[in-house]
Amino acid sequence: MMKSQDVVVLLKLVSLEDEEQNIGQQPARDRLVTGEDPYSVRGLEAALGISKTEVSASIKRSVASGIAIKDRKTGRPKPNRRQLREFIVHGLKFVFPAKPGVMQRGLPTAFAAPVLQGVLHSAGSLISVWPYARGQEMGQSVEPLFKSVPEAAEKDERLYAYLALIDAVRLGNQREANLAADLLAERLG
View 1 (cartoon, rainbow, N blue to C red):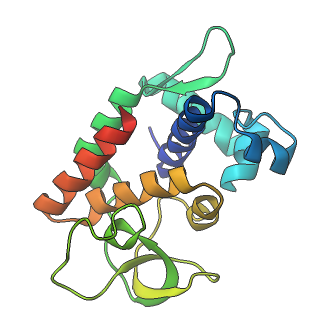
View 2 (cartoon, rainbow, N blue to C red):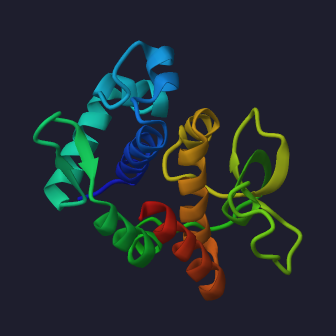
């Protein structure tokens, strides 16, 4: 049975792959921070704030469900982007629903996040935020998929964009969710 942090781990792996393809080498920033291979359990722990035990269990669940495979050459976990996209677009909001909460200071998510700013104008003036002590914006709180998401998003712009798009799918009405799903499909390839 999948847990919400499994989606966070998978999206971090997607972000690492994206960065590797754009630069043509391993992501240097993550390696400099931890001194580890960013794809290792230890590297993922440092980047995501999820314990090594949970990262390892998450990868095992993702491989068992078919949303990830172990690369034969490197042994690294590799997300199945098509399966992941299908799960996010069609199942995530039912398995891990999001509900706007109380007003709180935090990091903007969904349509208030940088990846979606200006893409769709909401009728309301309230923004959605992940509760976060270092956050600068005031908005309706949305429980992130995992408690360490705001810190992980601050460290990795690509991961932040993926997680914000997911929240737009989880929170949006049909039109908004479809727009976010289309942008997510574009990024996941």
